[in-house]
Length: 154
Image (cartoon, rainbow, N blue to C red; front, side):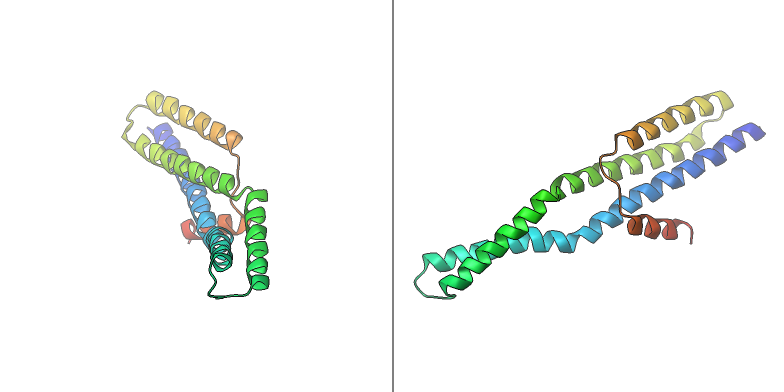
């Protein structure tokens, strides 16, 4: 019976590690919201204002200002595109979901009553977790990892 308890402790440790990983990705995504607003929404709005002002004769802004707004908007779009922001955020969302699922799966191991079943399922989950780590196309920021660790180790 002691062996089952040891395995349960290992599974709980892995559950917490996966929960920390999921939270780190979540924090990282939340930290990107202001930059996303500036680069995507701001860029689109600047372009809209610049384009609209050139189409109207009400001279809301002058042509020089419209040109500057269009250039800044293009700069925002280039930055967003070259940093692969959309791909990075999509990968972070995918990994967040995977780690949340793994954390739940580790928690569900509690229902196993035999050492052999527990061991087999724990090994399968550990292999799945390894594959997720190997296939990860994005890492959360160090700051996000530190914040997530503080939340779980407080």
